[in-house]
Each structure stands twice: as structure tokens, then as C-alpha cells.
Length: 184
Image (cartoon, rainbow, N blue to C red):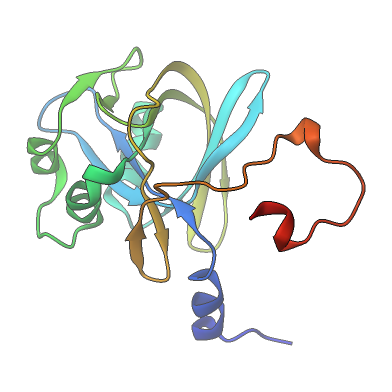
């Protein structure tokens, strides 16, 4: 049975994803990056993340060449930055770094100074699929801030979870069935 690509995309739009910029390039003029919702933690020993990058993206070849990249998770004031790095503003390559405040990480990768969380990574492994590569980054540096709400992409729009009601600690969960009323 084959799943229609349109149905797959419509279903995935119902799944919220944290918005991040994957950035690469130690030298000015050779930096690039892209907007993703496909970055997540892999392990805490060693600290590592994965990110899926389309092989047609300009950052793909640069990540292989540099052997390093950063994953910068965005906050509520970064929606224009997310659109800029997605290519929707017509800005490409190194010109994208004219927006936002950047520093150089331990690996040389560009790190967004006011990201909700930023991970400076060495490329540890790569797995190829038909259209994308899954890059495993071993974390060499990390910054984070609890000050701003994270930017989330859901149903083709950016959202900010300003209030998280009914937060449940993992230690508070037991084997009982939870209903929505448990969280309101």
C-alpha cells in the first residue's frame, strides 16, 4: 500500500515541531543555513542530536565539508529569521546572517546568541535516505535561555506556547489511564 504524499504532508502538519536554524560555515562569505523542524536530541552520552537535511539544500554539502554545524532553536521573536533562512524572503547564503546576532561556536559554526537553545556540533555520523541525509552531531558547546517562549510550527503557521497548563512531571505519572480532565 502506498501513502499519497499530499495526505502524508497534511497529517504531518498536525504535528507540532520546534523551529530551528541549522547553520554552517566558519568563514564569513562561506556561511549558510536553513530552517528546520527536523532536529531533536539523540543521546546524552555522548550529548548528541540528529537533524534531517535535504540533499538539495545549500547547507548539506557545507556540513559535509566543514564537519561541523550548529542547531539554533528559535524563540517567539524569531519568526522573520525563520522565514529568512527558509528562503521565503529571497535572501541566500551568507547574506542571511545579516539578520540576528551571531557568534562563532567552538567548532567555528555560526551560533545565534539569543536562541532558546543552541547546540554547536561536530559531525559524528551521516545516514543517507532517498532525498535527505540524517546528520548526527556530537555536541561541543551549548547555550540556553528560559527567558523567551519557543517558536513552534504547526498547521502551516508559527505558534508560541505562552502558557503550558496542567504540566505533569514524569515522576508524577503512574500506570493509570490519563484523560484530558487530568490536565485542566
